[in-house]
Structure formats: structure tokens, C-alpha cells
Amino acid sequence: MRATIIYGTGDVRIETVADARLIEPTDALVAVTRACICGSDLWPYKTMEHSDTGRVMGHEAIGVVESVGADVRNLKAGDLVVMPFAYSDGSCVFCHEGLHTSCVHGGFFGTAEVAGAQAEAVRVPLADGTLYVLPVGRDDALTASLLTLSDVMGTGHHAALAARVGPGKTVAVVGDGAVGLCGVIAARRLGAEQIIILGRHADRIALAREFGATEVVSERGDEAIERVRELTGGFGVHSVLECVGLEQSMLTAVSIARPGGAVGRVGVPQDETMPASQPAFYNNVTVSGGPAPVRAYIEELLPDVLEGRIEPGRVFDRVTNLDGVPDGYRAMNEREAIKVLIEF
Ligand SMILES: [Zn+2]
Image (cartoon, rainbow, N blue to C red; front, side, top):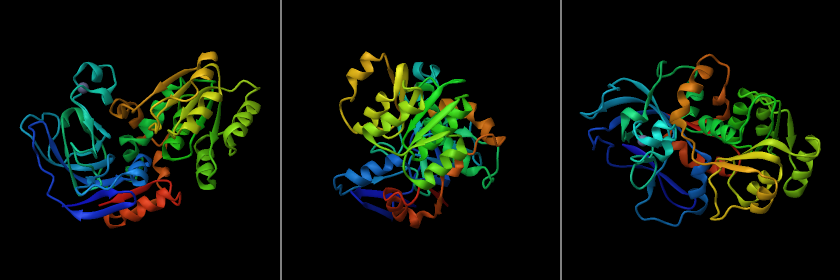
């Protein structure tokens, strides 16, 4: 089969690899029909040291179940499924608490252990717990939005929950990538009154406004902090969704939270230590968040997608086939594309 392999910084290739196959009796083999490139895929694209073996990339997909292992009970060949970016058994203590990304038997796609989904097929461990059967056809018009349930929409929702967004709250979203844009959708969906997006790319800002952002702050650093305070009576916002993961963005996020507010962080942190410890302390700002348990959120978000109340699939502004994936990485890295959808 053909798959996307990253060998190092800027080095993404489409190559023929050994076919994905069932290994464990709890596995499913899924033929990928849609996948995409994630903002987090850009971190290895920008920083990975050369590897001779490379790594099959991708952790977001929709596909058709081709076959299942002997112990799989809830899935059958032909089912259309969405694959969360982490696999999980659905039965351990953390899965029961809704924190599937901490599943004691779980792990992540696109790693050394489990190959990624920017490929013609993917082996899905713990398939009963991991996969969610979609009630639509293979090429349904809602497919792009359904694909976001594998990561970015669930991640935006997680940021909003961690930031304690609720009716009447003031919210700021740091980052105008696909996750930040989905964070705007999530904040509006949860009843936020004011939603400020911090970003500077015209196309992304325009989409953020359509998704429900009420104000835009395009300044950076101290000026951005000042602007947000101006827009919120001098105090800052109740809830901040940090959707970048850099030192500067985290510093900004904590600094624009009002006393007693909360920061929900879903941008993969690129530093060992957390910035802004002192302002967080003196203002009693809660800092929460982490890898989103998107499996836990599919059931909640799915009806809104199916009934058209939210359209997170609009974050895809470029469609390609597998051969176009290396250029898709380039385009996203150069901010030419927000998010690239891969059709098979
Ligand atoms: Zn579990």
C-alpha cells in the first residue's frame, strides 16, 4: 500500500510500504477514505532529525472497515468509521472517566508503535473502543465536518471545556489555525457572549468571524494583551483557549485571563516548563488542558454536525490526493492553507 512517510525536516515522501494488517485479535483494518494533515504534524516537519526508517504520518481519518480480529464485537466489514487520533479500550478507569487519551492500554496513531493514517489503510488497535460508526454514506456531503471529529473539532471543544466556557462568558482564542477556529465554534456552541480571536491571517480571521468570533486582535505580545483588556473592561476574559503551544502564546493566554479565569491549553507545548507561572498564581488563574479525549466527545458533537448546527469542515481549504500530501505539508507550513483534506 502507499503511505506518507516523514524522514526529517521538510522531508515528506509518498512511498509503497508493507500492507497494514490485523495483528491483535482486537484490531480492525480500515481502508482510509479521507484523512488530513494536522497542525501538530508541522512540528516534526519543522524540527525532526533525519531518520533512515522514517515514520508513517497521520492521526485523523474516516474509512471503511475491511476486516476485524476475532475479539472485535461491535464492528463489521463495511462499516464507515471515524478514527480518533488516540486509540483506547473504552473500558479502563480513565476511559470511564471520559479521559480516553490516558487509557491504560491506549496510545497514538502515527507513532513508532502504530502507523499513521495518511495511508491507504490503517491498523486500528482496540477497535471496539476506538472507532465510532458513522450513520452516513462514504461520500456524504458532511464528510469533511465528520472528519474533524477525529481531532480538531474535539480538540477545540476540549479547550473550551478546560477553559470553563459557558453561557454569558467572555472568551479569547489564541491561535487562528484549524484548532483555534474550531475553538471559536465550540465557544459559541457553549453559549459564550464575547469571543475574541487572536490571529493575523485574513482568510482565517474571516472564517473565525463566520464561526462566531465577535472581535479580532491582530497585535502580538504586550500590545495584544492591552487590546484584549481594552475589549473587556480592563480585566481580561473569563476563558482563554490556547491553541498554539509556544512560550509566547502561553504567556499571552495567561496574561489575558481575568482574575479567577481559566486557560484551556490544547496546543502541544514546545517547552518543558510552563511560562507565566507568577501571573497565573497571583491572579488565581486555572491552567488546564492537554490531549483532547476526542473519542469521548464524538457522541456529543455528532448531532450538531449531522443537523448542520456546526460546520467545522469549513476549516479545510484545500483538497488533495495522496500524491499531493508533501505539497500539502509545505502549504500548511507556509500558511498558504489552513488545513488540507486528503481524498482516497
Ligand atoms: Zn481505557
